[in-house]
Picture 1 (cartoon, rainbow, N blue to C red):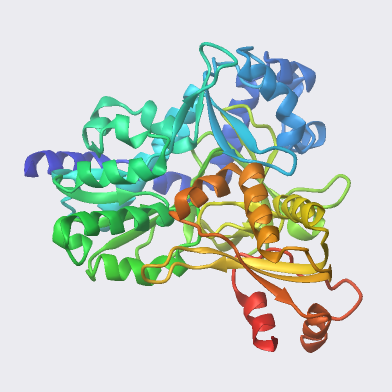
Picture 2 (tube, one colour; picture 1 turned 90 degrees about the vertical axis):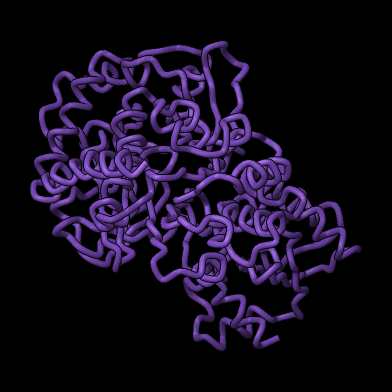
Length: 502
């Protein structure tokens, strides 16, 4: 295995020269990609609609093609889900990544082309390893296996040839043979739907393996780790997998989980590598071991534009390209991709921490949300749930705010709400149950995390006295004018401040 490890490590490090190239010539690489994408799609239905044949410059592209979101592309995507081809992208699209919904949908279906798989997602996967091998030349990761916490894969019944699942499932299902060999557990377990059974089976299947790396969302990784320790009676994961050296993570802010991982894996040498990989594309990798910034990956078949957050509500907002961005300003990301997403507003906000090379940090979503455990609860979800709970218990909500309760020891996470009622509910506990149940109905990711209280427990709701929010706004000097109570926050700042007053 040592020889195989050396060969793989050498091969993976070769890619570093190409990464250095786009770091050196970022603008040229980006412009070249835009021209490639436009010329590839000029004979698609979309390309004809916007006369791609006559677009010669970035300026013309931005003038002619309006900024899109899921709702504007949805009519095209719905036809693609039924098997129609050559609509947004020329190559055949058989796969869709299912992700949590926009304001109007429980789920989004993002097209995944062959090019997006190969040139974006898999290239990103290989680059994570290349960067790691470069930063840790003595790695032994290829002497063992990578434990991958996959999603659940489903077959879309609308059309025989069309498949969908969450992104990790789509990637696992299409992995090349060599990658499949280094992955554990078996695909039949990795793609199970029932998360309780899946965690049991994953733990049983992997405790005897020589696991050298783990990839997955922190929430489920902790659930699995606890299951493994329970089964083996060991104190930490290094007693089960002594050669564990690397954890790939992404999707949610890692800071709240850091201390728990140090307890689960008590090793100074454990390497944590963050990635920014969404259903829409693979965008960034933490390329330095002493910094949490993410290198923006510029040669993955994605052309980037950035919209200053203060202009997001403008009628025809002006976007910036890489040479125009400034440090430490909040931008919404707009992408054009090799899966047919054209000037697509993905809903994430970032700041540039460096512009030579271009490095970023994720600052949140364009809307308020809670996404501490991968549940992506947005304000629209919350409002729907509150409305239903009010209707069924005769209540009226005056004001509210909510935030995460982070994992603590053996306790799972949850959401904490402070609600001030105009009219009290007839049955407060029933109100909480309906709130919780409706969130599960309108948000598939929340529902998955709530399954048998494995990653999220029932919400904790405080029934706040009259004028609580008024007094809080007054105390923080934000009474009146534009100041509003933040409905959802991905941190505990507001809730903790109000609870202190209570």
